[in-house]
Length: 439
Image 1 (cartoon, rainbow, N blue to C red):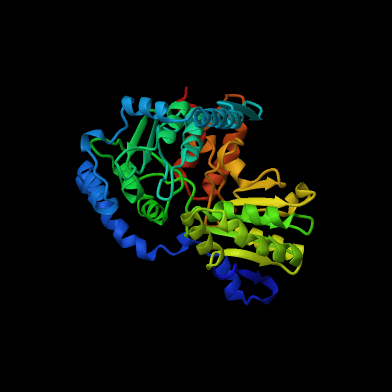
Image 2: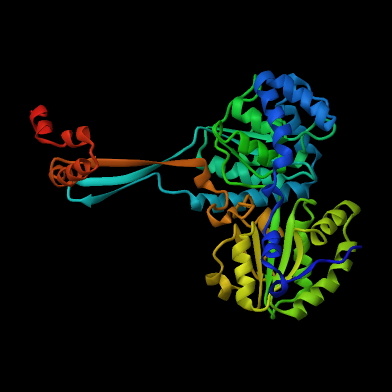
């Protein structure tokens, strides 16, 4: 096995430091042209393109009359699952729903800005959404739950799921069961760039939708960029990435164990253990080969590709401040803080999609059933984007009401500003003419 990367920050030149911050989706050049062709095909041919591209790209035969999962498929999925899987899904859906119910804003508020002048906001659901549930390297009922539950809690009238079919043309049983538990019944077997285009343009089977949410491969990310003028593409959620941040009090074996969590998603993932302790770095590095040997061949291959490639490994910082600086520069999707007192570091962490504290909160628990959403900004976008939540499925409308009592003062100031900016009609609307016309 190739050696696990060990990067010493104080020995890295500026260009190598910047290279460590790069993600897979940062370079989509090779994807844009083929994705452009896929998008155009779906726009022009609709369902026919979905069926043809499924056969050409994935070798899957689809029936154009059965793109949406039937009631029989939902029932068969429930029968096929082991009771413990159904119990785990129900438990997770309940936790996710509880969290997002608490997150839901009050429907409307108004405050008296000045005597007789009221301003506020109304929250309402967006009209429709496509929840994209990837499948490429495995089935993800977790993503099904994390995207559909907050959409249902928000009250979106039309919630549609797009997910790649199995090699046999079916839909993962656990994902179907999770959709039903969330309260969603429209699940279509379509994935990748094809799915994004179908949501953006609509087809005979799939409605045109207002927004698409959910993580995906570089193909999905590229399609979202191309179609951003046709559909709201939501927060940037590409291939998985994580940082395990460990101080000198952390258990190196646990740090090594948790470093593998996001690395096993695929060779396009990113995963770093960041520490200022040489002992933690070296002991964790010694543990990793043994831990990796316990994985199956495919997952071991993925982890090797990440931890021995350009987007993963162990980062040894010269001090704790440098370790924190790297974390904030990276702005990871998932951040796990391992320390005897993990909460003491929160104030210095500014950019992360989620922050998990202590060795009893591994990323796995947050990914599946803690409650907060596991669909998180990637590619450094945690600097400006938040975790997926109820707010992503709602919109704010500003409200205002000025009474006769409040009008004179506001009109006087607004008229001065309108005149200064040269807007004559604006100023005229607040002149004596208004009083005259109003009788």
